[in-house]
Length: 102
Image (tube, rainbow, N blue to C red):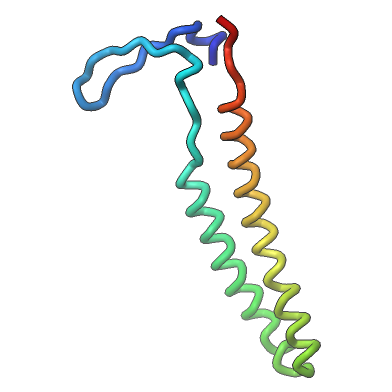
């Protein structure tokens, strides 16, 4: 970002429409709410779809085997949710730890 904008960046205020000059180290990234919503939907929908397809297996086996199948099917959407969420956290953390020397 410093290569594109320089050490100071011009930003327009959305409230007063005034241009402000901000040092590039004062800009911080935030976690994206859209990705949080998408990953949560993937987890919820993925869990429902997987349980729909394996419910017969869960009901036909003994309790211990049904519990094993149930927990292993919940792992798949949880793993997708965790991976996507962790990538967003790493993206924000990496951006916020980078500074331009004066």
